[in-house]
Image (cartoon, rainbow, N blue to C red; front, side, top):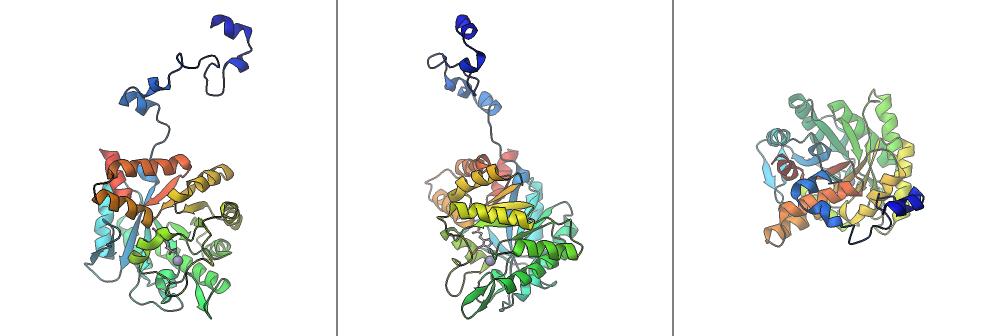
Length: 346
Ligand code: PBG
Ligand code: ZN
């Protein structure tokens, strides 16, 4: 060994992992570093932290309402008073951020509930920030929950119009910021909405409010349970003319590039698990924080298998969230956030 290293230049004997090139098995044994849980913890490369998880809440009008969503065990539609109670538990569990979705009683064709200062998300934001000023409140900015037809934009002659939708989205974002939202998260996939929202926020004195853009949002079959929770299923057609084709990797990178040019502070890949490759590519392409949305269908699959006793829920969730972070996500929107936060405290 002595002789070998002296005879060859160092660069040839030590590869990039620090292993001596002559040191194959049996001298080199990777199992050595796996021999005890203490040692495994010391060399563990990826950690999920409570601070990087964002927990979604579905808000309805009224009081004392807490209605379970059948396809998402543990998740509810709830009135603001009930949400405040749950948020208190979230904070005690170590969570620091939530994302709000509104489920208004009245829907129309202008998405009035999305941009009205009296909208459910605006009202909830004001009350939540009053009680929990430190909590990061992310406002999902979209129109589908507020539209009678369930699409994410203005509809005319069966078409989802881009530019008029962008105007309304910008208005919704300003109204959410005015209510105290800390982060604006447009999820509609209209072209040009990040730039329009940035300008509108700046013109109204919210230049300090960041935008977390749902940049690479795919037209996925994994949103089914969410649409039950948010009552936002499209009443005709589907979302394939605005959300992305799951087959398109290069186009996803273009979406991310464009949103960054338009002023996004953070970008998102959604769903997370079926698109881990894109989380990794996004991570390598940009230096901005990357969010991943571990969506409702991904949650429902784990829950259903766990309820049947087919999977160990805790281990699956830990592995799932670790994989999303390992792929390159800085932030994870996940319905598992409360369970995970509790397990992290154990
Ligand atoms: C609405 C929106 C959706 C989700 C987040 N915001 C659904 C959709 O596009 O139909 C999905 C989240 C989930 O499935 O958990 N624009
Ligand atoms: Zn939408």
